[in-house]
Length: 171
Image 1 (cartoon, one colour):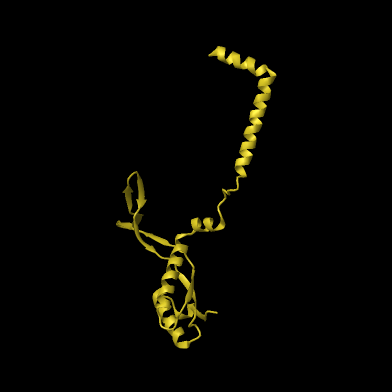
Image 2 (image 1 turned 90 degrees about the vertical axis):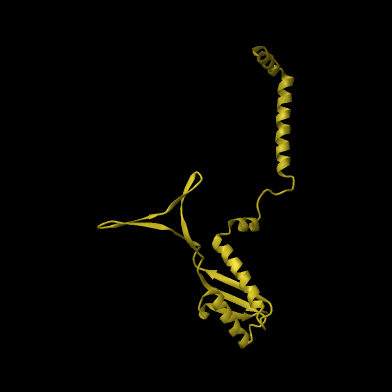
């Protein structure tokens, strides 16, 4: 083994080996630079980043908008429609608690369950994000009778008062 190392050291002292090593290094640098400029972008577009970063609240709002829009378009006179929701909170987890009542005090603690090698708090329920308003733009938005149907349907479906709903005619 040491013989081989000695031969490599002797070879490295020769100018031809030095030139070949420098040429190989330059060639590798050129290949690296060329591979970076091959025309393909490795960066994510803005839409990819938005899709990845959607929160559960935004997903809930998107799904609710679609469902409400589909329902409204089934109402006579509405025609095409677009819906936009405004949400004021995120999804809220409510955890199960156990209460130990003593003589003079009580102690609350979360119920913990085993999930394989992990322990987690038991989720009692998940509250959906709070909807604070809705805008509905539709073809029949100029007809008072259609607007009344839309207000009633949206108020009932979203469980919000009609003063948090705005209906307008689509252009």
